[in-house]
Length: 356
Image 1: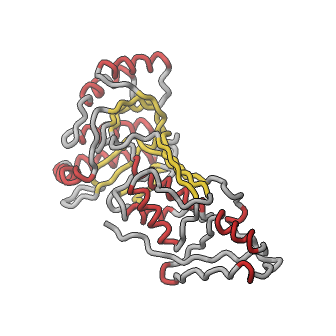
Image 2: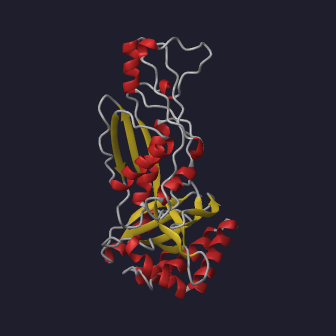
Image 3: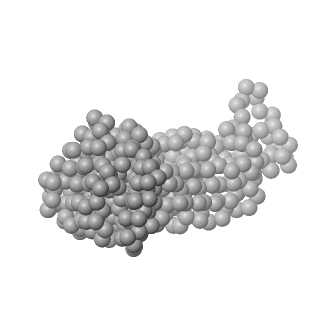
């Protein structure tokens, strides 16, 4: 597990010309600003002088960024989830494989909101991982959360392969970047994620070949590829950490097949060929059947041509399975797909994945 992000220094906001009472109210209602510096140069922020001793600011001094936000104005962070992966397997064949993923982004999201106010912050309502992410962010920049209230919402199901916990963490961090008027920094996000869990690449707004345990983007794959999907969620949940050992043993046994599959997938991305990407995703899904099988996989694969689907995808360490279409299914095809999945005991859902 990588170490938590190192601290960096903060830059104190210059005192304003307001009288004592107004200055005290402003310190209560407004979030502090911060400027990140390398960890080695961190210095504790200097306390502001008492309001009654503060003189007028020079005419040329710029107003602090947070001072321009009206008191009580909500800030938000949003992050998309995934429909599993188009590929999950070793980065290359070998005795010690790295788990590489090409996550399949979907238009389903996690939202985190913070509204500055007069009361101490309530607990972040997304659980311990997001709370840890917030703490690591504040420690990294040397900041203190101002008074206010957290709230959150998600339409990502937990434990089925939609990257719900990673999306919650990234949404939390994006909210904090906006609260403190800091530029979004994917490197900081990666370091926070590395201190908490294996992660998908949902912190990027494009496809990527990503090492989920190493927290390293191997190759960015762009935004040209997109699919329409019909998918279902099989019963149960999967503990990703608990299946890591069996996955690595499986990858060692089938390393050459995975390497060919990944080569085909990357070629499809580089040539902008969604049908080729869909074929490689089907191969990856079939390979995963040997270690984390989906009960309906054989039925879904056998009827792919009947529905004119370009491929099959799964959440390799989850419970999702569905079809990839390069064109939008019409109402008639959606009805047929719904009836088919209903015959297997599942309610079908439709969503657009990717970016193209």
